[in-house]
Length: 279
Image 1 (cartoon, rainbow, N blue to C red):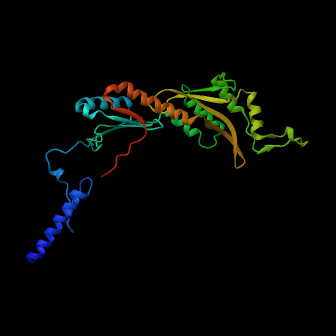
Image 2: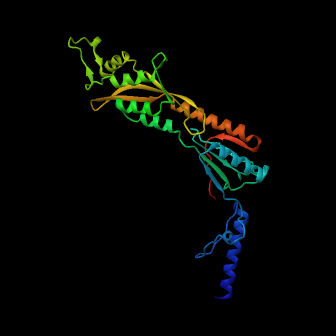
Image 3: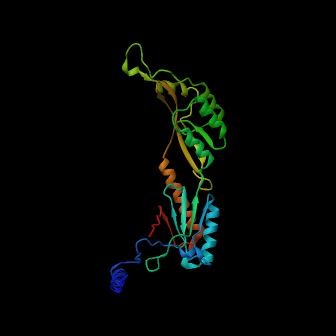
C-alpha cells in the first residue's frame, strides 16, 4: 500500500475518533469492517461487577438474603425493592445506582411466590360449570379452608350444605313455562333450582379462608354459588368476588412486610415492575 493511502486512512481514523469523542454522548468505538469484539473479562481473575441473581419462593428467605447482602455490600448498595401489583412477586436490586453514579442492575434477588394450594383449587373450580359431585368433592377436600353460608351470612353446617348440594335437582331444560301462559309466573331454570335449594339450605356462597400465595396474609375469599346453563345443560357456577381487591390487599401486605422487616436496609419499596434496559 502506498504511503499516501496509508496516511489518508490514518487521517480518516483520526477524524472518526475525534467525532466520537466530541460529538457523541456516552461511549462508542469505531470497528474496522471485518473486525470482531471479544469480552476480555472472561479471561480476567475477577469479574468487573456482580452478576448474581437469587430466586426463591419463600418471602422469609428473600428478606434474609436482602438484609444480609445489603449489610455485606454497605450503604452504597442498599437495595430498592419492587412489588408486582398483584402481590405474586417482588424484586430487590442491589446495584441500582443513581444519576451521578449509574450501575448495571445485574445483582438482584427475585421473589416468586407460589400460589396457595387451597386458593389454586378454588380458582380452578371457578373455570366453567361444575357438577354437584365436583362441588361436593371440593368441599370435602378442603374442610379446614371452606365454610358455607346462607344469603343472610349465617354459617351453614358443612354436613347440611353437602346434603343440600347432593339432593338438589338440576333441570335439564333452559326454562320452565307455566301452562296458563301467565308471564308473571314464568320461571327460568335458575329460579326453579334456587327455590328447590332454599328448602334444603342450599348455600348462597362459600368463604375460602386462605392466602393467595404461600406465606402471605390470610384472606376471607367470598365465592358465590349460582346455577348456569351451557348447551342446554345446567350446572353449578362458582364466582370469586372482588378478585382485584384480593390482589391489591396481598400486594399491600407484601410491600408493608418488606418495609417492616428490612427497614433502613432498603433504599425504597415501590409497587410496580422494573425493566433494566440494555446498552
